[in-house]
Length: 296
Image 1 (cartoon, rainbow, N blue to C red):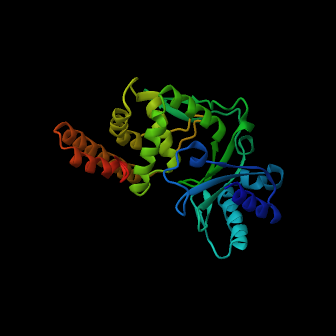
Image 2: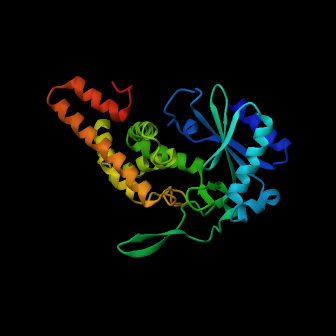
Image 3: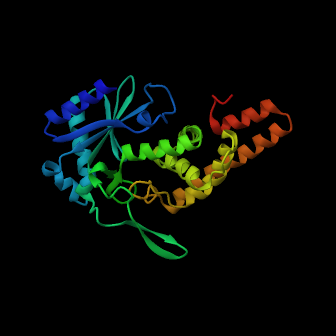
């Protein structure tokens, strides 16, 4: 993976991109990949661009789209025999062994004023400003394209989020990781009604806000899917900069996502009922409809 990253980044540099740093991030780094490395696996590469050379993309209203198109043009020249496409916020290159997804980025301060609060949140009918928890040092994070609905740059801090995620997972004896991976598998099996990062953040939100202490992994699974229809209908913010992950979802998309989550919830209820009746094999079949074919 590192060799492939170095090759991709090297060619972008040769073609005129001024890159401050690059790294592999996402599910491979986090450990929430849902399958072994193969042709359907996504390896995410973050490419942080120099603001002095490419700052017009950070400030321009259409900068996200222009940055993605520029990266795509370069990679199409480098890999003429591979499928190269823009997929929401990344440029994807399909290789025979795995897919590489390149995310152009800037330092957080290049596109956001670190002194300004994030989007307001409504509590009890009153709008309150949300202060990004990482704004004391904005250069620790980045902005990446947000092409869901409105085109803009959205904050992300993979290292800090990973640290926060691992702390919650450790406090729950590894159960956050198990729920997050299972939820991602369900999401992929059901046409990805939300992004993988959005789903991981909903699992994180569940353990931060709604998870009971000392519950078993199975009980957490049931409880998470009971909460999921409500999560799909409400806002989800990534915990570092408090950027909304759901802001590009239409009302119709929310209803459809919630409907799929509700169907999963009903299947789990039926599986639990069958299990209590001693119909173990039928219960497993129902669980597999939600958790995937590998469920034992």
